[in-house]
Amino acid sequence: MDEKHGDDKKESTADLSRRGFVALTLAAGFAAATDNLVSAAELPVTQSNVQIKTPDGTCDAVFIHPTTGSHAAVLIWADAFGLRPAMVDIGKRIAADGYSVLVPNPYYRLTKAPGIEMNGFSFQNQADMAKLRPLMGSIGAPDAAEKDAVAFIAFLDAQKQVNTSKKIGTQGYCMGGPIAFRTAAAVPERVGAVASFHGGGLVTDQASSPHVQASKTKAQFLIAIAANDDQRAPTEKDVLKETFAKANLPAEIEVYTGAAHGWCPPDSGVYNEPQAEKAWSRLLALYGKALA
Image (cartoon, rainbow, N blue to C red; front, top):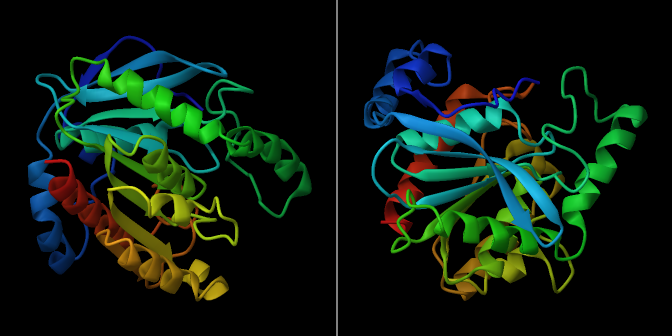
């Protein structure tokens, strides 16, 4: 996939809309509900390719921020298909709302982005999974995500476009969901908001489970659960609610009706635009509260 690497460039939210990221052809009722989101995203943004040193090597990443000023930072953890145009577009959209955003390649230990070709990929195809498993294993190795989180947040805090007086937000998709939880635990003094969209493996029976680690932080949480994930693990949401309630941490935990696992990225085969926009509105509300 073309990651559009190269020189920095400015891009307005009108450009993003023309590419279809913000749908303007939804039914009138839904369009009215999202008018504020579209109109609020008015800042032109700049995108650059960066290389970040970590304890395990050098990570290729994309850094996106408004063209002027310093802003709260956001760290995005991709789903299993890694750093690619759709994830960069998500980063651009957040940046246009006034945040300085880092989108790293989670598979940098083994390959440059994107690492895996998603066109024609099938999770039921053993050959496809044989290519994906080592990549996912590289970020799933013990302490790998935590080490990366520390390095990525240190990078963000060193950028003049980042306002270090404000907390950092982190969000993850699918496999990125538990990594976002682990990020909050790895750098608890900096992370103020965590969002998981159709995250997998948030709750395990291990003491190191992401939900146990996250409950020891001071962050606020948004946990958006796919309907079919809830069907497979119907008690997980209850465990999450109980855990965060006991920790006295604000947590919005919701099953998104009709949304299948993977519904948020616009290049997903199960992309659900109305429910993705709903999740986006809740993300902005979270960041507006927790990162101010």
